[in-house]
Image (cartoon, rainbow, N blue to C red; front, side, top):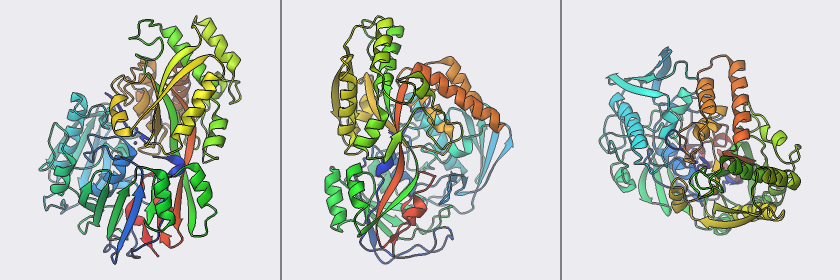
Length: 554
């Protein structure tokens, strides 16, 4: 959850989470409550305190595409489709049913009697309003390039023929991913009586309006400081009643302080992000348990095709030289060294765009760059630059966020700088910016090359291709390849599984040749919990959504 005029996201890491650093620690109140899937009464008898270093951009679903913001949305907003605990497959959430009624029409029937926490009825009119405003805000640029509206690239129109029926008309038939998109950051349903139709609504107005209909409601909100959630007794969705009545989330500026707090038992849960060294240390602590979950997060360097060396708007613009610079970077990145030295194996090398484990994943980059076996190759990089007529050392400005992707980002990018400069082929101007500003700058052509991570919106290879490489994409890096664009649209509507997999592989080969981005790490989800905390195993699943309702003490 880091897309742009066609697709934008999650800071993305992605969109985007922290792979090896999703942490959960516990030690205080809470109660067993009822099972999360039975729809019974919520738990009670105490509060659970979560600590995090993540950051919220906004809780307006049209204005953010990052994991910190989406973490809040998953607790307080309802979805038409959602993923049950323990599964990556989507099912109706506040919908009674959802199905294709024609190749280009997806019809959703809502449950009866749905309401928002403020007492307003939740009807098909709210659903139509939600998706109409997503597109309007995205297309107007009112989201400042940080919204998820690009995920709705195949949505043509939305109709509400009666209070419980919603008909989505799609531009292309047989869309294989649209049901999953309804569970993504583009899918939270909002109250048309609280939210503006064509502009972002301030967080304070959303909380004051109690425009929530998810498992929890926000009762107190101080952005990136302290949030208080209360279980929503009127939630009728797939996830059932939360096991803990009250959740408080404390935001920390420094991961070392968060580690100290959880070790001293001052918070119940630490979720995103501790360093790999901290995780390794906590594995040996008898007062906690470490829970490993399936991972989908990736790390990558993004190039701005306008402002990178020899980019389209630079005085020395030259597409062939610009490509050679990107290729040389790909030749020099030593993924094994980064994974081992910085992340202690909590991340593994990634050699393509779709991470290992998903259908269609390849290792397209391994054969094209470096030594052909996954290692770096300075000679190959030098030959590319010389053949293209690029003078060395290349002056490269490289940016990373010092607070969004975990405390190890500084060490990670210092090592990448060293890998590039030690050959004499590059001189790297390495800079860092806090995430709130970084999210604005990256889509404004401020950074020639920069760090991003991606935490998936849904468990399908499409989510690692569509947001990044359509002509209008969430990166906003001016990448435009008509062949790639058409292949992405084709795979999304290909019903034959074998044919679709072949297309996904073909897309990875094509973008590996272009190098709009250079992916280099894939991470697993890791949770660290107190020995008396339950539920982390349930929510740390292949949905890649950390739902607070599963957590309890005892």
